[in-house]
Image (tube, rainbow, N blue to C red; front, side, top):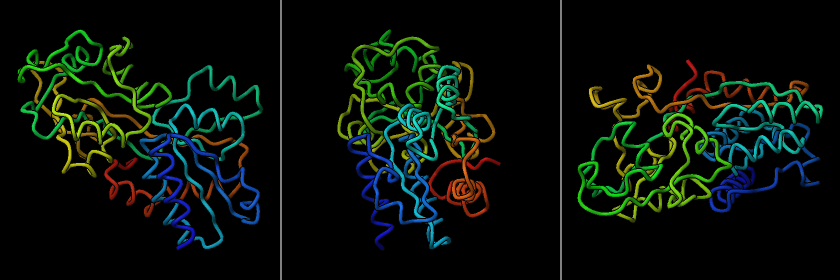
Length: 289
């Protein structure tokens, strides 16, 4: 019970404050012979926490600490050698890899799951689908009112993750085609903040990982997405993400130092194994295979 509570408290901290220190900075953690710290993607924090919980049940000597804060925060922690594993919802950039090299870190990339990014609105919103082009116009500020996409009159209230988030970067690159977000977008420190905001405002629109959307199904509406005007509308599901039918999807990564030891490698292999991939499916994400 004590070990489960430790993870739960750290997740709460990551969700609310978007930050947290890895357990390895705590001298008390040194008493554990099999300690692993994971820091990074807010999209992945619940998935990684469930992995950690089940792994520690199977490995009584193990202690796995999980914090969020965003993919960029996790990458920085890996480069600075203050975490064993960086969880990331985007690839490390060439600049980040060079910075790691200068610090003596050799990043090893492992795809551990896949995710679809769900577009969410208030449950009372009459809109059920949007095209990628409409999304781009909404989130860049080219369009400003719901009436422009067939809804009732009222200005869009756009919610986004902040720039340290891998989801922010992915959405900007793949949906906004590298254009800037509207200056009126409200940048939120955590995915849970977007869900809460969209669930209480009828004019709101935001994006979250598929696993979060599944958990919040009673409080928000998930829109179907069309690649263009003539394409079918597709809902984000395990099947449509894996097949590629749903276009706003991506791999989820672990980054480790290539020189890392067995405790880290064993945890990564657990996540990729049968039990770990079952957790991926159960928490609303998509398995690697």
